[in-house]
Length: 204
Image 1 (tube, one colour):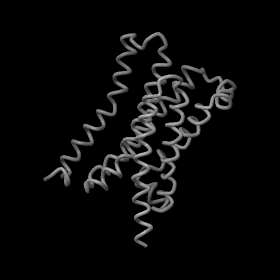
Image 2: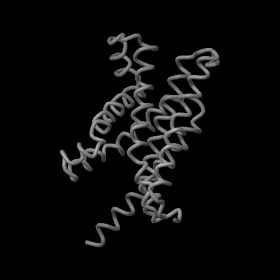
Image 3: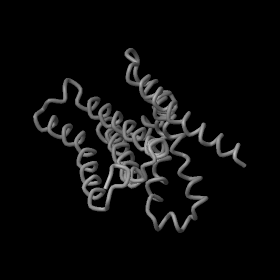
């Protein structure tokens, strides 16, 4: 067995390890809450942390295909669905923090925020688009939709990623270091996909 061709046992352990690592940010956040160590504005801390990891897992998920193509490894594809569901998981926590803890289900205020605050205007649709992707992530739904329609639907991930980066960029008012890093990484990942797409066109 080599790193290029992991056997089922190694893949199972890898999936467990990635799953536990993906839960680590939530465990760390929960421990900080238990120790009353969320800072002067706990709601903002929870919102920022869950949003950061939503975007992080989104870009990690988008890295799977370039890594697989550039390395020749097939096993990273086994992690894509789980990582994609963690995007939805942290995105849901991010949205629920805003909905419940920040706005207390004040729908009028929420609608006003969506209209008046550009970063929410972009971020809210990006989260909504995640829902059908999560619902159709199973093999059964893939078969029901058919491969072509399923791939078309899941290509929304690129639009979601762009919306997520713009949401983060517009949210941050002063230090744009992290949003810039996310934007550059996304540009590289989309650029790699564009190159492979153009190569595919030239072959035909």
